[in-house]
Image (cartoon, rainbow, N blue to C red):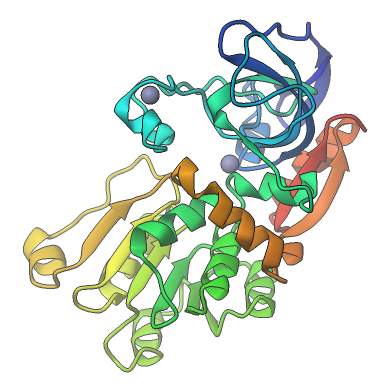
Length: 329
Ligand SMILES: [Zn+2]
Ligand SMILES: [Zn+2]
C-alpha cells in the first residue's frame, strides 16, 4: 500500500509498505478520506517522518475476531490508539487513556485501529463529511459539550484555523453568538460567512476592550482557544465575564502565566482542558454534520494523495479551511 512520508524540507512523497495484518481487537480500515491537520509544520521543518495523519474515514476490510464492526462497515477512525479497557476508555473518554499512543498513520491507504475506536457512519453521510468528526468538528464539539454551551451564551473563539472554523460551525449550530479573534484575513472572512458576528485582529491594541464592549461591557460567557498561542490564552482569561468558562483546545507546550487570585479566585472562572469528545456523543456530532448548512464551507480543498506535496504546500499557506486527502487517487 502507499503511505505518505516527509523526506526533507518541504518534500513529501509516497512510499510503498506492506498492508498491516489485523490481530486481536485490531481492524483493518481502507481509508477513503484523510483530513490534514497540523502536519504541514513537519513538512516545513523537514524532519523525515513516515507516520503522518491521525484523522480518517473509511471502510472495514478485515477483522481478526468478531466485534462491534464487520467487513463493509463505513466508519470514522478515532485518533490515536487507546487500550479499550480502562475506566476512561469504557466511559467513552478514550482520548485521555493512559495507554493512548501516537501510532497513527492515516495518510495512507490502510490503517489498523482497535474496533472500539471505529464509529459507524450514517448512510446519508459521505466519507468526506464524516471525516470532519475528527479534528475538524470533533475537537470544538467536545469543548462545547464540556462548556455546556447554549443559545443564551456568547462565545469568544481565538484562532480560526480548521479547528476554530469548526468551532464557529458548532457554536452556530447551538444558536450561540460568536465573536472571534484571528489575523488571517481569508479565515476571518470565512468565519464571518459562517455567522461569526465580529472578527477582531489579535494585535489590535483595543482587542480586549472591543470584545468586552460587544458583550455589554462584562465579556463573553465562554471562550475556546483554538490557537495554542499564549497571548490568546491571556486574552480569553481577561475577556470572559466573571464566572465564565474557557476551554483550551489548541495545543501549546509552553507555560502560560496565571495569577491565581486575580485570574481565577476573584473572577471565579473555570478553565477546562479539552482534547477530543466523548465517544458516546458521536451521534450528536453526526447530527451537526447531517443538518448544519455550514459544514460544506469547512472543506475548502481536496487533493489526491498522489499530489501530497501540493497538498502540504497548500496547507502551509494557511489560505484554507479543512483540506482532505484521497488516498486512492
Ligand atoms: Zn484506556
Ligand atoms: Zn487533527
